[in-house]
Image 1 (cartoon, helix red, strand yellow):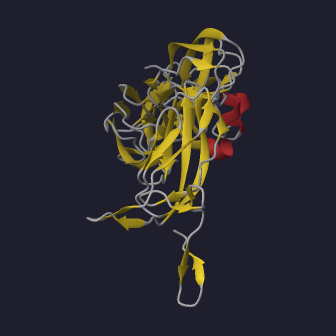
Image 2: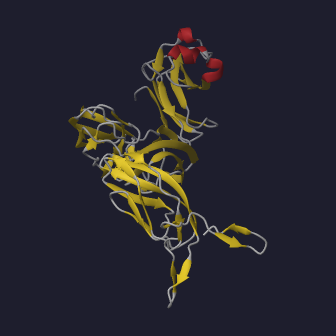
Image 3: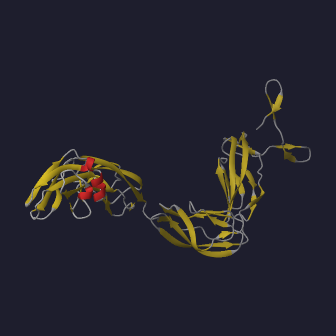
Length: 410
């Protein structure tokens, strides 16, 4: 028989200490002291010095005798480490200075009681939306895992081993609440998970070119999921700048040049690049109006003609609420016959390759006049009077209102 002490039948609150001691070669009685102490990393001296609290059993072994027995200990704490040992003396009262044999050999033995699971790993690697993912959590003594809340769409929990797997379809920061279970109960914990967005993808990787010196420029690039933009090589033309948050390129070019450059779109997952070119040409700016007035002598069904002009304009157009019946050509000529009376607010836009300049107008169309030509009433286009020498334009007409002659305001 060998001298020994071991632990078995360990539960959440009890255990069995199995011990053997050999006194077969001695003619004296050997006293065996069984110790159990809460805590790990104990020394023999730690345990024996606290014998009043750690000594749980004393056995006497007669001369020439051996002993093999066990003791059940109860009311233990769950998930706790205990240290155990026996010490042998020749005295029926324990005195650690008289100990001549101890088991196990240094250090004392240890066991850990069972209990609800104890979490050992709640860290999860970052995931990326749209990419396959596999990581997991773990707890000592867990026999199963239960998802409580917080799992991103597309991911699942393996309830047998705590693995989180799948392909996430949303991104952001998530708090996944999980129970670790066994026969003694459950322990809940939260595992944080970050799901990053997919790498950026271009939705617009072209820019307007050419542009012109002193002409306002506004264009840019765009990529889904991008959090920043940067120029990785080359440079923008003088006077232009890149908005690193939105990808917009804006400014007013100042130098005739052609610049080649590369823009990157970046997020935490990745970076994409595209090569671009902007040519800046000289000698052209948006049109400047040199004549932005129109005659206000407008009458329904009376022919009208006037014009506007702007430097370097390639075309003109109405915008807003133009006068029905009038049109404007690419030379700035406004012609036609108004068909409705009233006040009309509109712009005339002068455009060239460098941009568009607008001039505002507010004109009133007055009622027209008619005469009977023998068949029908037709528009009177002019009024004349004979001044004794020739026929001249009538500048004003009057009508009798029953009391006095007043302006006809035709």
